[in-house]
Image (cartoon, rainbow, N blue to C red; front, side):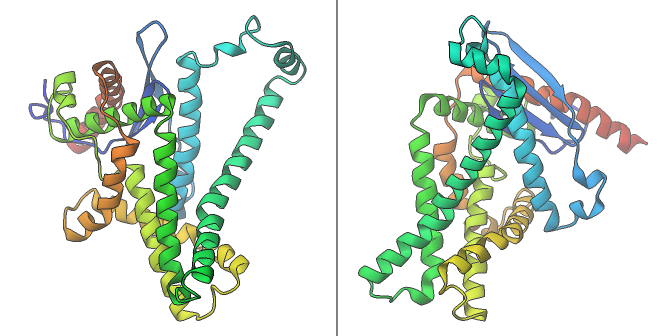
Length: 330
């Protein structure tokens, strides 16, 4: 039965591409579907706990954006780890396939070592993100301004720094998109978007219907990142105008930019929520860079990947739509 024929009202659905799988999340919970090594699709219901359910301020406008981002990152990482296990990417942890050093580490440290490795990876990842998206743009703009423009760009530093950050981000995504494993994840990303579009248009969730849909969605995290970059330029420019000279000491300036990240994320989150419900000129302008960027972060999925997207969204919709209909009847 198609959604048009279904009397149940639509619910809001979002998702994330995984290793050989897709996670879909709705108002009542989440589900992830993964293509197993034997070719079958494994679907698992997931419980989602929100901080706002216990801490009401976490649901307030602007503030909720920060909490939502942290929750999404943590939940997404757990789903990614689960999908990697189910897809068989951890087969090399089998004692028979492990090297003597890996076996010795596993025998003597076990889960503790994994926790340490995960912690170190997160620290290194945060350090790399800081260097690429905070320090490097500032350094490059300062260098170009000093040796080429002879300090002409001083008053426009936040603008050119933001543009440089966007260029670095696009270059980074373009490079990683060339990695075969990442390219396959981007194909699942495309299937996620297409499946959601198919549902939102009220069409039956079939491979044929999903295949016809666009793979560029305005509520995608890619669009969110670009909105944040644009908002950060605006906020930084306002600070420089209101507090002249605030950006002259670069160490202090970078610290200030780190401190305003929560505000930038909060405003960006509110815009994405707004963009999902409206289709005016402002939304189109601010969403355009993110939609263009999705040409890199999404790829056209094959039919077997689309099947995984359909299974994941059905797992979320079945309970969510029934629960919503029951609430409305009550």
